[in-house]
Structures are given as C-alpha cells and as structure tokens.
Amino acid sequence: MWLFWRKNIERGGEKLYLSGKIVSLELSKTMELNSRAMELQSKGKKVIRLTAGEPDIRTPDSIIEAAYLAMKSGKTKYTDNRGILELRRKISQYVNNRYLANYNENNVIVTNGGKQAIFNALFSIINPGDEIIIFDPSWVSYDSQIRMLEGIPIHIKCYEENNFLPLREDIEKAITNKTKAIIINSPNNPTGIVYPKSLLEFIVSLSITHNLLIISDEVYDCLLYDHSYTSMTSFDAIKEQLIVVNSFSKAWSMTGWRVGYALAPEEIISQMAKIQSHSTSNVNTPSQYAALKALSVDNSFMVEEFKKRRDYLFEEFKKLNLKFVKPQGAFYYFINISEFGLNDIEFCEKLLEYGLAVVPGSAFYADGFIRLSFAASFNELVEATKILKTFFRDRRHVFNEN
Image (cartoon, rainbow, N blue to C red; front, side, top):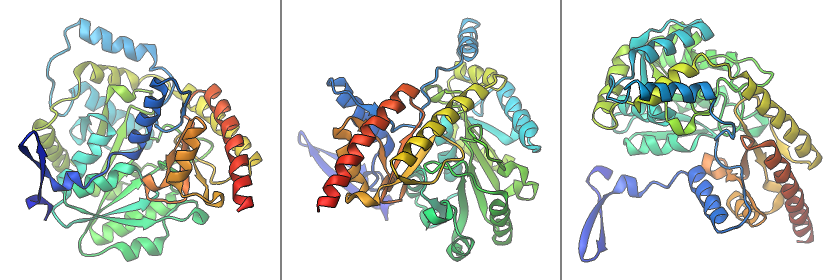
C-alpha cells in the first residue's frame, strides 16, 4: 500500500522520507511543457506557446477595479472558509438564472480555482479502492488526483470516429460494485467537444440506477461556438448525486486570480469546507470581490474573439489536410498526427525545435494526437500556422522518403 511505503533519499547525509504515492506521480504535462517553453524564451529563443489553457486577453478593468476597491476599503482579512456570503449567493443566482436550476448559497463553496474544487470534491467522496470513471481524452489532473486519494481511475477510451464521445455500452461495462462516481467534462479539454443532451440523459439514468455520483467539470461552459449546451445542473433528478465544478479563470480571463467554485448537496459542501479549513482556508479575499464583480460583466466579446481564432485555424488546418474534429467549445484543437511517423511526444519535441510549443495527446491519455490552444493572440496563431506549414512539409518529405 502506498500509505505505508517510503522512499529514502540521501542528501548531505540526511535521509528524507517521501510519500510513495506522490513520488509515483508525474508533473502536469501541460504545465511542464509550458514551463519548458518559457525557459527557452528566457534564453532568447523565439517560441510560440500554444500549451496552456490561458486566455491572452486582459482581465476586464472593472474586475481589477473591484479588487482594488476591496483592498482600499479594508477587505483584506480572513473570510468564511466557504467564501464570502455575497459571492456564494451570487453564484447560486447566476447558475439558477442561466440553467433554470435550484441552488442556494449553502450549496456553494468558493475554491482556489476549479482544480481545487475537483480535488476537494474527490477528497470528500473517495474511500481507498473506490473506482472513478473518466472519459478519455481527459484533463491531465483527474487521474493523478484520484490516485493521490487512493481511488482507482477507470479510463474509458473515446474514439475520434465518434467525435470523442463515450460509447454507451462502454460506460455500462465499466460500472462495478466499486464504482463511486463518473467524471464528465463538457465542453471538453482537450477535444473541445460538447456532450449532447441525449448522452447526458443516459449517464444520469445510469447514475440513478447504480446510485453513483456525477462530478461535472463545466469550466468552459461560457466558451461555446454555434452549438447548444446542456449543463448537468438542469437535471433536477440527479441533484442530490451531483457535484458541479466551475471557475472564473477561462470565462473572465482570471487564471491567476485563482477563484473557482463547486455546487453540491449541503452534506458534500460541508465536507469540502472541512478540507479547506485544514489546508488553504478561504480564497484570497480581494479575488473573491473581483469574482463577485465578474458575474455582472459581459464576457461575450471573449467568445467572439475565440470563435474568430477557431474559424481561422479551421480553414488553415483544412489546407494542411490535417485530421481533427472541429471544436464546439473551449479553446483547443486536438489534432491526429499519426501519419507523420513520430509518436506524440517525439512530435512535440521536434516541433519545439521549430519554435512552436504544443502538448502531446498522451498527456490526456490519447496517444497519437497533439493539443493546440488557440487562447494565444491572433498574430501568434498566424505565426504558428506558418511554422506548422514548414514543419508538416518537412515531416511529410522525411516520412515519404522512408
């Protein structure tokens, strides 16, 4: 068992005892590759970073001003561990109005980004040996967080031919008497696919039948392009078995402010609050007041800008005869690179030599693909397509020669 396993490392004659379950984890590939590209930039190499899911757009001035005014007025102290009442109430009202849901402030906890909301949700429900179903390609941290908590991640492969949506029979086969929860991420990172309502209805039905929890990661729900969207909050029948996670990072370009939230039954929220009380305590106080303001700020200009970038790349990628599924939400392209004679990690290493950083699909449990973020500026995307044209021309030439 990881719990009783220790790794000894000698350093200056002193033994360090490290947790085996942490030693066994890898760093987040998206963060690792982004850091590597930044390191190359610091050494003077020109690198376009299409690695991180971080909007290049500034946080709106009114949100920044709200944080400043909060600090000037003395709102720099500890708050309720769950978040300030005004923000929790505003979040519940925002979700209720947007999705015709029925939440109140006691169903909300404010967290240090969406990532902590997911971790605390998993921490609240997992007992050792519990199985959590994940649909691949999947966000890099689900698996690691589950394993840190001694749960067992159960990966279900989703196929490109099915628009990266899970097959119903595969979901049914994966459920055992150890299954505790299913994680849904729509719009999806890394594919940009939006789950249709009919598939969500099927998952809800299965969850009710087998008494499973659903964790719905909806951090990209504001970034939708010409496609209808169904939030899990709209299914009242599953409300007592549902944890919804969201964030201010993507929707209002507030990645560094670290404000996320979860909606769940009060019993689960109280358990998540316990975890926060013994770890991070409340979210940065001025950031909470900034988030409160954000909920009244129109962010449609961001959606329009990302749609323009998505459409530009769509046309450019068609010219390059690339194989991909057009994203319906979020800000990523997930491109099949199996024709180029390299695995996805080798592909990314070679592409970095040309000055373009992207993320290998294997980071998302999908070998043979790359994820390319279009959250960068339009000018950077134009430069990136030029690099890709050169790179693909060279690779196709090498591959054909061999």
